[in-house]
Image 1 (cartoon, rainbow, N blue to C red):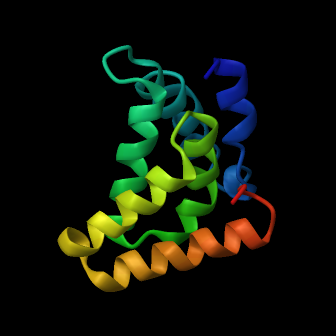
Image 2 (tube, one colour; image 1 turned 60 degrees about the horizontal axis):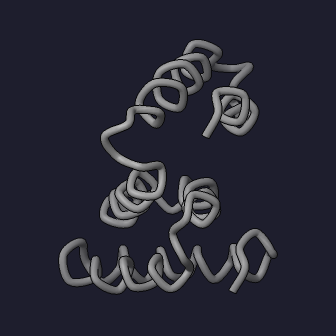
Length: 112
């Protein structure tokens, strides 16, 4: 992911309200952390999606699930990770994640 792509994609609606948080998101999270070479962007996406599922953070899944596909995680792998996490992060978190994934597929945000 290039810095230009990161900056463009991470401008949420709240960036005017919290400009420093938006700046940190762009400059630290997406331009530094996501660009570190030890993990591939694919692996970072899979870890990020797993953390979101485990924490029940469904709102952020709308951004990170499609991004995971862009970064090389297959839809089947994402579904399998969510299924696996049901046993470690809780059934309700996994079901909520699958529901969000289904919504994203229905909206055309992700390819089935």
